[in-house]
Length: 129
Image 1 (cartoon, helix red, strand yellow):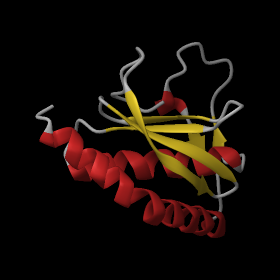
Image 2 (tube, rainbow, N blue to C red):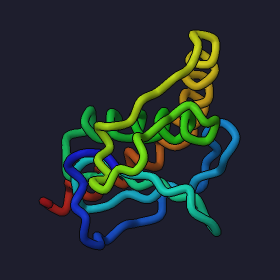
Image 3 (cartoon, rainbow, N blue to C red):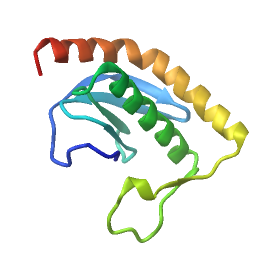
Image 4 (cartoon, helix red, strand yellow):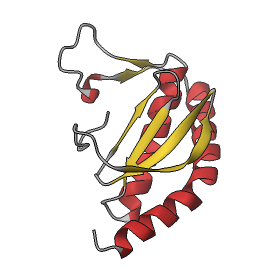
């Protein structure tokens, strides 16, 4: 989970299902800032907040997608045990080639997900939230 995401349950809307590298995520957008992902079965899920301006929303989406891609490939490490579950404690270990592959996976994800996410963001801000 990224910084700035409210821990309590938030209302979300389904954007769609998109692959990020080796895993398909259900993308949802919510009434918060930041983002989070969960790879627990049965459905891997990614959530992005709509409360920020569009560049902030896109940044959260790309952050979560890249982090999820690295986690799926075993390139994201957390100290254990870590009772705080603080995301800033994570370490990413990957070669330049693996980084390029992760960026390509995230680019493919973003190209497919951004149009629908943009519609949700516009609708959210039109309501005056």
